Image (cartoon, rainbow, N blue to C red; front, side):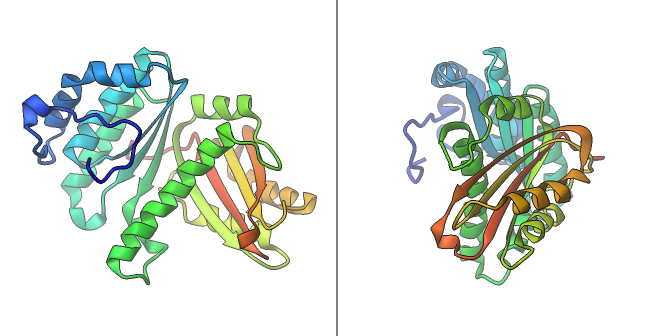
Length: 269
């Protein structure tokens, strides 16, 4: 906690654990959270939307996250969870326990966005491990920042806030993807990248999508149409599509697309 820069920090399970780790024991993580449930209730009481970001394989993340989601659900909040799944080298047990934690969390969360560490590192595989881990966290941070920005900050083409809330309220299982391209067909290519390498593999069709696009100048009408054409094959006929666009001068001739694909299915959940 000393390394975390946050407006407020809550140390959970101080009496139970004495500041020690849960040792990957989810039940200890759950009990630690319950020890401080009133603190959590008070901390989120003024919020309309509660975002929870957690590693689902550990005792703290896997045990506390479902309880945090339950507390927020009881307060009738819109609950969005980003669950990060373990590396493959952590073994089948870690994977199974993470999936069990996700299944428990889904009982209370409106949307659960899944992300796999292995897939994030694949994007930065040529970097040294330490830098790759930092870069993978930055990818997640960019993804979550895009959602928060869409909900709270004006851009050149604003996301429809009520549609965005509806998308998250009915999101179910979701994943995200990022693509970036330049050239004449950059919009379609960026979307194809985002669709072909999501943070977690879900089965389409999806019930809804958020599309955020950035370029040195906002995308052209033709590029927007190209993006929607590329995405439509992965969506149900009456899918809710929320989109926005912004200017990022540092991108120069490149176009960056971030997709949130909601309402997919997984045989493992």
